[in-house]
Image 1 (cartoon, protein in one colour):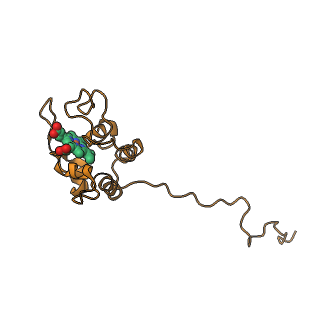
Image 2 (cartoon, helix red, strand yellow):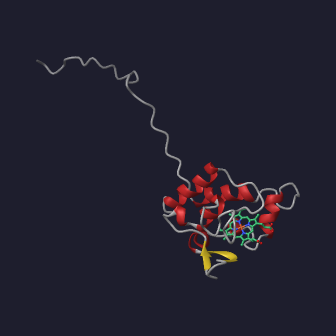
Image 3 (cartoon, helix red, strand yellow):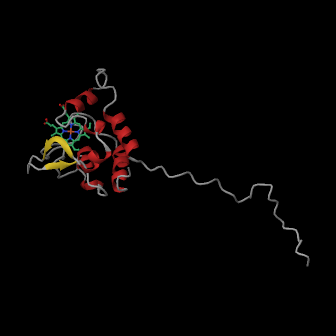
Length: 150
Ligand code: HEM
């Protein structure tokens, strides 16, 4: 034995079992979430072509997602609105708990909550318009459940 036994491998060729690297998992951060909310709810404001966008601007809370900083959005209350039952301020969200977050409950019209479309004191958002898709709500919920990555 000389130690010069030939290996059967030819390293100049791709390994037959080699796989392409897995695509990086897309994880939304605040810039993507804010851009998503703006494109969903505030496109074309002022052009007269998006009544939903104009209504959101005129809502008591205005288009609060549009200009807030990360920390205002994650730790703040919905501006201009209080709980009709208790008068308390309404936090926009609870980090790590999408289903108890007002913005998610508002968009999905959570049954039994103040956002219940039939019994809630506020009702489902965006008020008077077609609800956002389930996939869109899930994207926001996933970001909240992931701890609101900045
Ligand atoms: C995060 C929790 C939210 C709360 C607590 C909330 C609360 C309210 C309240 C109290 C009103 C006024 C209802 C009335 O005048 O009878 C309103 C209106 C409205 N909200 Fe929200 N909202 C929330 C999120 C959103 C979001 C994310 C949108 C997205 C577009 C939205 C869109 C609207 C629209 C379009 C109106 C109607 C404005 C009008 O026609 O004058 N809201 N909201």
